[in-house]
Image: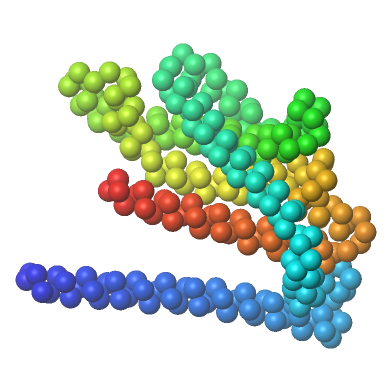
Length: 268
């Protein structure tokens, strides 16, 4: 096949891929607008209880008014900061623990059943323990965001370490590589896609941990606003907080997905 024909096939493939992406994004936007439109219409004709379910225009109005007067930004900043720290710590510590367990076969045999048990436990139940141990504030909320993702990160990455093709390990071992070189040259590069995929999972887990922590103890943050809105029966405020969480969590997820695409292309 001539090079011109190959380039033409490649251009056609890229054109079709771009059309597919455009169609997907357009469909997603249409579905979202349709959902919001039906929600607004049902509220206008009083088919739903607007006191409980509110409606999009009222949510947007409250959101904008609180952005203008500056009352919402400190809550957003606090929750995003807590989530980012919990996300980073959970991922780093989970990866470190997985590496230590892989490094020592004795530790892997000892700790593996404990990891299974820890993963089956509801991590949000540790909230009161963190509050008593770390105090009712920033540290206990960050600890919740970290704790809820660290175990699943450890299990997923350690499992990925074990599933690396052992033939690669045997090749570098016969060439005289020590364990550190085996890890850095074979194990870690082979598991980069899994680690990056774990980051996307940890985005959601960190948000869950932080919001639950704010439910329990915080005086500032989106979780606090949700509880406060529920207490004063202002469900529009609750929905505004959920709306912001959805937007920021989506942005974090897309950031991790972008990082995954960049790093994965480098390792190919």
